[in-house]
Image (cartoon, rainbow, N blue to C red; front, side, top):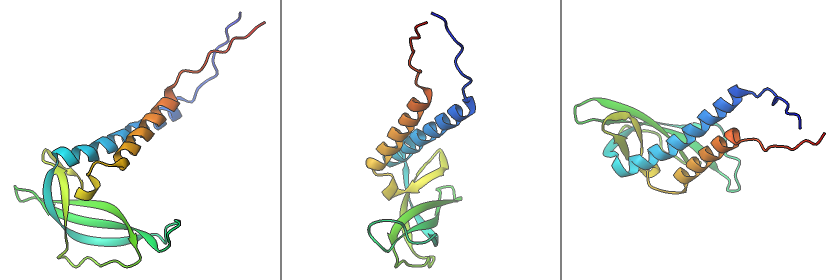
Length: 149
């Protein structure tokens, strides 16, 4: 039996896809952690913008919106945040008076999310499963092939 050297592998793509998988897992865990240990705050909606055109879905008239908000910390500093929302064609413009509930880490307020996005659900689980899948696919050991000569 003669062993041959494995073909040159593209390590850059393996590392890149693995890092993307780690980011998916971190995103899912972070939003889940915000729901359990995040500090609640009330944020002021500063901006609502529609992103692109109509979504390509079965239900017509659905759009993606970017929601910008700001909230105050106990020490008086203001923190800005942004989130995405999927809704219908009718939406309100930011009037500077609308408020929304957010959660943030008290030790690092830059990591924050809308309270509705931090509730445990299928979204966090999907992010983590996709991340694990990407890491597994990119790093699984190749099967040994027996070559008869």
